[in-house]
Image: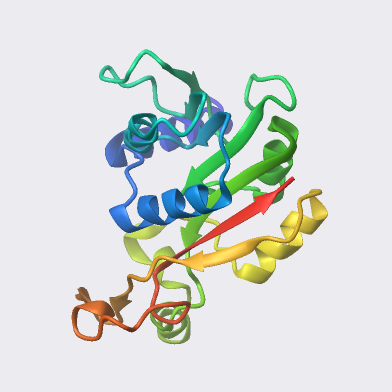
Length: 226
């Protein structure tokens, strides 16, 4: 078996274990950004896991159609209205150009090898004026800074997080990638939930609910137009 085949099998085995399920705060952040953008039409969820977020979107009736893409096979319990593409997201999807009005990707890009290639694929798939909504771990939080200084890497990229999480991106990285791949200027927002360094069973917000924003959020989101 080739090394590439071994890698693809590994990716799929990891995805089957985790089911691609993001925590509620990340899904809620993505949904908030999507609603604020006013985007509708044909939507692609890029990295759909077992389809939980897609089913949530379907129930809101805010889109004309929903397509999901993931390395996992189609879940057995998924509404027939949702189309499923099984594909390794490190490679281009078997879809024509400019067919989606919206792409949503929740906690996916950090798992992929080449973010610039991924953004070029987003750009290829989106219609002119289309919207991209994306979330990923926040490397600029107090917890992540502490992890970098004392642990040698950002919080979401240490220990058991690797090799599932392989690509850490800062806001500046995403701004540069958007500019390099033809997108406009991204707008950023934060989850408002963050774990306390070394006491990760607790969140800052459990004690001081007003601690939000960049420093106290473990994840952040981005919305940008083509």
